Length: 118
Image (cartoon, rainbow, N blue to C red; front, side, top):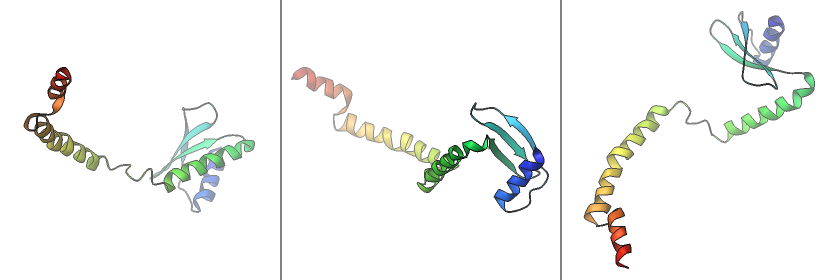
């Protein structure tokens, strides 16, 4: 089976693939899932009967729509997101809370006082 998978993978990639080994991985009951490991590369492969081809085509179209929409653009950029979160969370929000809550007399306590007076 590995020889057939290697041939199919080479046809899909349009280039030769070095020796690969495959191992089954869990994760679903509809398809058989494999991890094909080469010397410098790894592939995730899903297998099913030929009459399930339409299901795979629909899944591929859905995944391509996610890519086309740019939904994965930020994947892997966690450091930049974390820095912005820290800067806004600790650098911007406390001064604004102090300004609106203490200096300008807002905040929860001022709101409660106004509600009690009315």
